[in-house]
Image 1 (cartoon, rainbow, N blue to C red):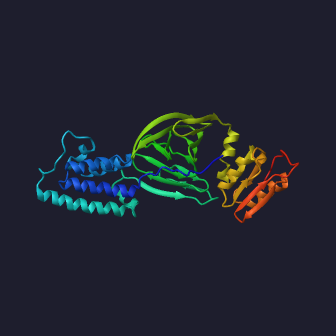
Image 2: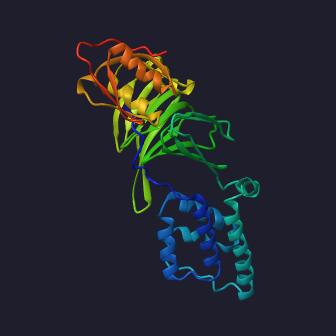
Image 3: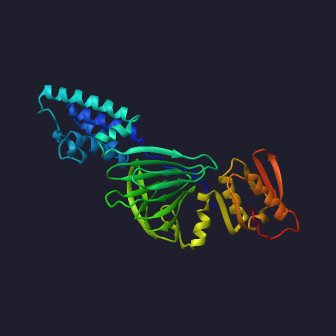
Length: 351
């Protein structure tokens, strides 16, 4: 059974972080490198790895300030008072304009990237309930989003990061030794090692199925915005893993099972003896109609066959026709399944 995540760990607003980083550059360039500011700067950096990277990138744009050493804990608080006042003011004006440009980048990332290609292009994609979408990324990779899925993609010259905010996505990754491809899902990290794989964000875990190649699994541990990465396992082609702070499940999966699992990419759901409880849970992911099994003895009823995504009526009709299950409607968006005595164990085929 798969559940969409209800406890997604939020990731930084990258546009806001870039703007805040530019303000720190201006503050230090203006001679404000006092102990209080430095302590606040360190706290700001520690909110996430992206905060630290953003500061490093913008300081590098003005490396004649020699400000990169601010990113490490110094023996003494730095000062820029040795710089002539007129020079600081000129630099301050220039950096203020740069800060405004960073804010403008929120609406025009492609233009800005032509000048500063080390900054990431960040794009968000999503699908509605019951919909699927295939996206071709600029690096040659493709991702296919399943029902009710949202991702944030950040591409730069050095990294390729995808944040799975909810739902399920299938990835076919273009090989690039210089730019790692990483999928962040909740506190889980799935790092590509040249492969194709599927990732589903569950309520309290991450589900990964590898079709080709290998992926590395890791967990991000942190408190107060500061994260450390812990390696968990390497998952190979033909394997499925479910993990959170540790790997809860790792198993070999047949090609037939993988094809059934990923049949949603062709707009169908395929089953070969799965319990009705699992089938109904899947069905509920693809429609705004909630189907509920109110008779517990129906939970383990085995189901075989397939049905097309979006044909809700056909699914419910098949339950009624093949098993004699009674479908009771509480309202137009909520149906209950009740067993009828004498009907047992037949497979359902919905075509």
